[in-house]
Length: 163
Image: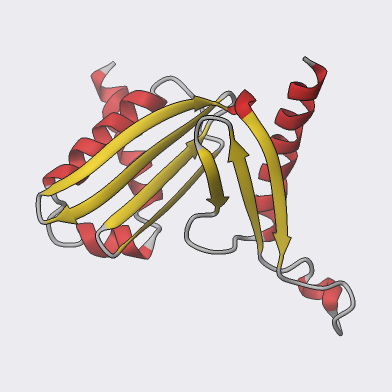
């Protein structure tokens, strides 16, 4: 069981490190708060399949959002300095999704648009408990990844209407 948790922590860390800000932060020696935040995130995700992970870090603050089938797990970091920071990890139900706004960067009317269309895509989500989340956190994302996530979120919205 502990080995499974360690593997999950490694996987989450690898995914978070794809963000340049977190990568630079932890390049030489990860701060103590980062290890504690990763521990909380790992415990919150334990036993669940990660559907989407997005992260950003800069200017002494950061955010990691993990979506599983039924949950939104969000770690927020503020006032990060050396080994100290204020951080919190919250878990919310995905069923509390109130709206999704799609932002596509490409136009179907641009020359050769369908070669690159729809371009980079962002999703702006509004949750009852979590408030506003913009994914991906570090800027517009790959169209296929974001379309797949949008389909899943659209199903979340539809299920709230049906209940």
